[in-house]
Length: 347
Ligand SMILES: [Ca+2]
Ligand SMILES: [Ca+2]
Image (cartoon, rainbow, N blue to C red; front, side, top):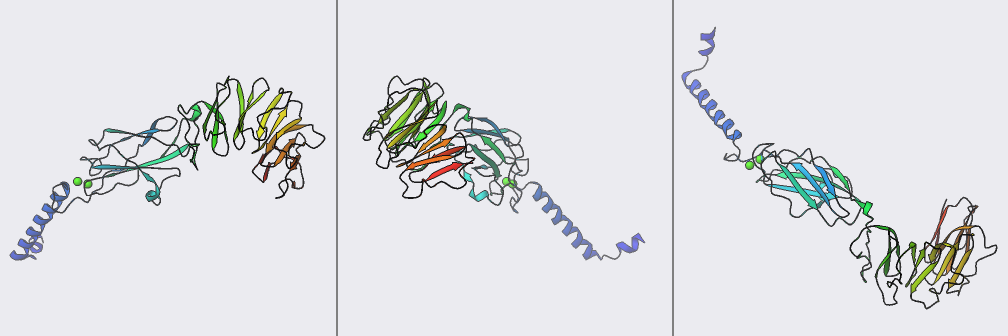
């Protein structure tokens, strides 16, 4: 039988078969060394599977990963493309993620790469992924995706938006802040040591914190003035005094919080009464009776808000936009806030 099957191929056919096998073996050999093959390199680098956040600061995150090769995990790859985003990264949104500058040049496969992204000041959490390319480039699949949280235990302030007077440029060292407040074009930060840092528009001295700059426990900002509550229950106010917002009424004591409107100011005392001073053109400084049982305050441009311990809101002053018309039922509120001409209540 064997002889008969072999005899199925003529001498010429047998030669063609040998030639085909020879070409096929040459092809296989070419594939095993794709960097020199005239057929080119069609093999992608391997995917990074161990991308890791190795350290963070208040505005930078350092990543490490194991280096893939040119082809899978062999050879030396040519480039990394490491991207970050404030959203989780997938292949479908890879193009939307932010590319980096200055990724390391890949070393030998199996080595360890380290890369630090700095100036991360837009959000507290970022996502990262990396792809590896060879010289073609063939790109690897997406690496594992890792997230990193900036080390904000140091109390860094993020500021964004209109920066016409550098009101978004937080002075260094940007750390240890525990509270923030923003005015028309200036900013205040309260530090854990009780000092206030102020920056931005200062034409009215709203950034000149009075001495001694110490013992502050809360901050609030009006249009062009600033106020801080001290641990002894007194309020200090500075900046534009056009409407006497910086003249705290006597007796300046027993305050537990302060809320600056644009042109007037409210202080809440430990006995639950509200003191109001400054511009009074809409009677926003005339606290309705009974002035008692207040637990929180807020001030807008020409209106004032007080929250009582029974969960009801009291509002007074300008009502041109209905900002003093309280929703029904007026109860179960736990916090209040005031915009220029609108009011917010949290239930
Ligand atoms: Ca190659
Ligand atoms: Ca390759």
